Image 1: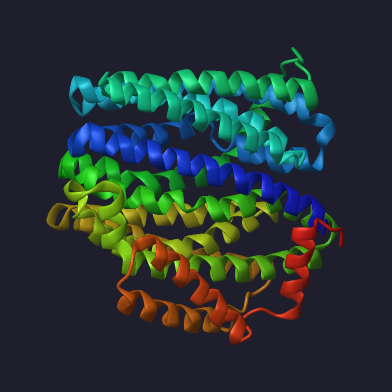
Image 2: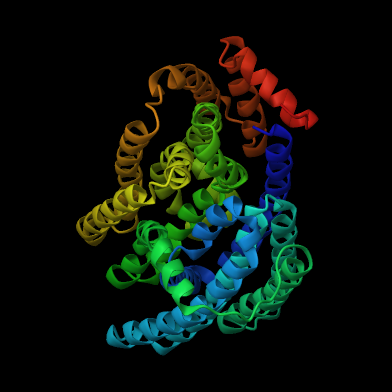
Length: 475
């Protein structure tokens, strides 16, 4: 594989994700403090519900385009224009569903208003993501990175000003819409300048086949979004906005960390898709290294969040959210499992087994809803956290089964042992160290990786790969 291309794309995406996630985190912490638990719960409910509904505006088109354009770059303009038209019709259907659902369930007018605003924001973002698909298919993630940073710099600046001035939740929501319009227009300009042409040759048969081919991707996204966001929606109806706010603080902290596997997977997905057609051995090699690296990074994050949950919540959110620490302890186990699930899910896409990913996520979504129905009424946000963790374990089992069946069987146990031993040593330090939060994070990380090196958790080939990545050399 071209380590130079992958490493450059990883660096661009990593830099963008770190900057954008940090800025988003600052904005949402500030929003949580300024709006209060109830209004913050209303905002996170609106965002979660909007994310659930925008899948109807995409139906997997963006993910499908990355794979197909990576294989047939000369068809980029045709795919883009027809996908754009398809998304317009899908967005109209999505809005119709939102209006009917909110009115049938008799949500308060204030809640409905903020949901409509967030729907418009997330729908605009799916059109922006259509341009991201073009950039990623051409393996030019620096444009993706630039736009993500632009979005968050604008949103942080405008959002904090609105909150500081006390303009309220509605105006704060409109800031998201305004910023996304600017980002979309910028993305479109870059796409037209570098990769695509505006072709008015609209082919409805092509659109029909595109939507049909993308639909398995869409179902996977639908099911994935359900088990990612349905807990906040169910909490809102079953326990109220305050519990949504408490749960969302912990959940959003964990979700923010998923940029780490997302950056890596987005960089290697087009490469994996190509290798499935040209060299399955290289594809297996990429997967073997990837599953090891993602586990090594994800495990100490899970351990650290569990033992530092009270300090993390207290430092960032303060006394009103202290109950969120318990939810964070439970959800912390979700992190390292999700890191590996990210890889296995995209691997199924790259080997044309998107249907198997859809089946896995569909079963996970049903499993999650059932767990939430049983656990939220008696246990509230704690029940939602337990459901989230158990669902990710459930999904891992299915993903692992299908990767083993259609590609190869990863040897998980040998990979797990040495990072687990290093994590135990780190955990002992976190338990008995009793020092400043940030010093604990830094020293704990050094202890973990130092221990991993000491017990030879890295092999010679790992050092060679890292050397190539940092020197940007070709293999």
